[in-house]
Amino acid sequence: MALAIKVIEETFTPRQQAVLTAALDLLVENGDGLTMTAVARRASCSKETLYKWFGDREGLLTATVQWQAAKVRMPFVDRTHLSAKTLRSSLEQFARDLLTTIIGEVSITLNRTAVTHAAQEKDSLGNIVLENGPMAIRRRLKPILEAARDARLLRFTSSEEAYRSFFGLVVRDVQIRLLLGDKGLTQSNVESNVEADVKIATDQFLALYGAKTNT
Amino acid sequence: MALAIKVIEETFTPRQQAVLTAALDLLVENGDGLTMTAVARRASCSKETLYKWFGDREGLLTATVQWQAAKVRMPFVDRTHLSAKTLRSSLEQFARDLLTTIIGEVSITLNRTAVTHAAQEKDSLGNIVLENGPMAIRRRLKPILEAARDARLLRFTSSEEAYRSFFGLVVRDVQIRLLLGDKGLTQSNVESNVEADVKIATDQFLALYGAKTNT
DNA sequence: GAGCAGGCGTACCGTACGGTACGGTTCTAG
DNA sequence: CTAGAACCGTACCGTACGGTACGCCTGCTC
Image (cartoon, rainbow over all chains, first blue to last red; front, side):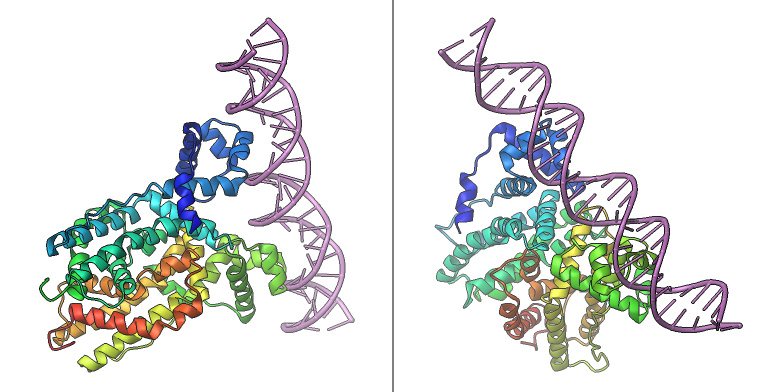
C-alpha cells in the first residue's frame, strides 16, 4: 500500500534516468541477463556510480522497473455523466489501453523480469508490476463499473467479479503467449487486431453485465 | 509441429526419471537458479552422468520441462452424443482442468522457467509449455465447440475466437497474478473457489455463445 | 589558483557455477 | 576370474560477473 504512493515520490535526476533508460534497453535486448558492466558501458558511467546510486544490482533493477512501470498512465475517464454510450466508449478505452500496453515490448520485458524474480522468492518486482498493471486497472475500472451499476447501466453483484471477467475477455491468452515467446503471435499481428478485439471484448462484457436496454 | 510428436516418443529410464524428478523439485524450490551440482547431489548421481545423459544444463532443463509438461493429461470428452447438458458438463470439465492445472505449483514453476528462458531468446521451453498448455487445450476444445455448433447448441463464426473467449473467462487474471507472485492469491485461496469460478465461466460462455435455448 | 566533490574508466578480487577429468566401486558378460 | 561398462564422488579448471578500490579528470567554490 505504501508502495504505490512511494512510487510517485520517487524522483531521479536526468542523468539517473538516462542510466535507467540504458538499463531498460539492455533488459529489452538481453532479458534479465543484464550486467552491471554492460549498463555502465551503455550509459557511459562507472560501475562505482551505479553502486553509489542504486546500492546493488537488485536496486538498479527495482529502480528501472519501478520507474518504467509508473509511466504506464491510464487515461482519465469522465465519471460524471454516464450514459450507455459513454460507458461503452469508456470500456473500449480501457480495453484498448490494456491491450496495447500488454503487447508492448517494454511491458513484456517488465513482466518477464518480474516473473523471473518471483521464481526466486524475490517478489518485490512482481509486486511493482502487479501494482502498476492489473491492480492499477482494477482501481480505475471498479469505480466506473459501480457508478454504472448505480446508474442502472450494468448489473452485477460483485464488482470484483465483473472486473475480472472484463480482464479475461480483453486479455484472453494473449499475454501468456507473448510472455512465453509464442512466435505465432507477432507484435504487428496482434496490433492490427486490437481494434476488433476491443470491440468484441466490450460487446461481450456488455452482453454479460449490461442492463437489458443495452445491446 | 514435429515437437509435439517427438515429446511422446521421448522415453526415459526410471533412473533418469528420478533425476528429472529431483531437477523438478529443485526447480520448484529455487526457481530457475538450479545448479548442476545441486541436481547431482539431490539425485545422488555424478555430474558427469548428467552431462552424459542430457548434454548440458539446457538439455537437462528441457528434458525436465518436456517430461513434466507432457504429464498434463486432459480427460477425454465424449463427443458422440452432444446435448445441452453434456456440452455444459464438458465445458465445466475443461474449465476445471484448466484452472486446477494453472494454479498448481508445478505449472507455475514450469511457466516461470519458460518465461525466464523466453527472455533470453531461448524459446524452446516456451514452445514446450505452450504446446502442452494452451495449445493442447485448444486442440481438444475446438472440435467440441465445432461439433456443438453443428448440433445447433452453440453459435459463433470463428471457433478460434470462441476458444479464446473461453480461455479468458476461465483464466482471467489468475495466471499472471500467480506468476508474478501475488501474495493476495494463495493456492488454497484460489483452490476453494475453483468450483464456483468454473460455474461462472461456463455460464458466461454459454450466455455468449449458446444457442437461445440454452441459458 | 587551491582544494574538493562528483564522476569516469579500469584494474582487481572473490565466488559461484558450467563443464571436464579421474580414481574407485559395482554390476554384468563371457 | 577377468574385462569392461556404467556410474558415483570429488577434485579441478575457466570464465563470467557482482562488487570494490584507485587513479585521473572536470568543474565548482572560495
